[in-house]
Image (cartoon, rainbow, N blue to C red; front, side):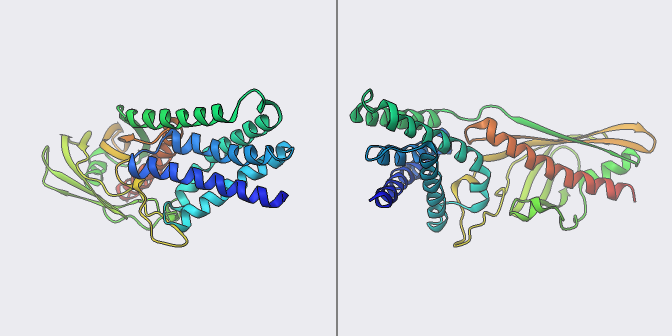
Length: 311
């Protein structure tokens, strides 16, 4: 009976939470607090709530139930081609923290609150919380450009560096594990024309960034908008080829610039900046990931420009 009720509780938690996630992502188009905060809370809470009404539970048991439910939900998302492994791993700190918190709430409810909070009141509270978070995620849209600037010093004249900024040759294959995960990385850059109105093509492993030039102040400043951009990564799934919705438009590069500062006749400081938006909540968490990715992409390009300029 003990194992039976625990298995049923895990099954119910997943059956309740996965449809909520599907509605938020597929129907509402939102990756937000409902997906990354409230659903993990429910995954942790529901098994302890169900089992705790039948038998007393220690907190460690509640935690085990919550984490087993989360593991089963993640495996099911992979098996149903709903998500890829890399993005689940990126989200895992949030998922683990809020599943732990949900398990703790389930433990408290089973031990102390059953007589104070009736079951119908609890269901009403959970329903209102779900509807409220769906509404909040839908209304919350990214309205600020997030800048990311990377700087490198190059032992070459500013005019030489400028030539390698405007367009650059093929970059060698990356050795870093970071780019072995499917995250897109730059290969080369070409330009069609010269001056304002020219179009620069920065080619990545997933496609090309189309960048109309908005400022051409040789040899000190090159600015451009991003008219078109490819998907940010090839998602990996052990069972299927997947293309989850968050690959389309939830991370967008909006504009960029290369700023060159002459240190002396044979030394140049090169600054690369990208302005982008992230339409996934909580933004403070996902911006940490996006900043790390953008800076690594910058470093790859800037180190190549340095190498070519110093030849």
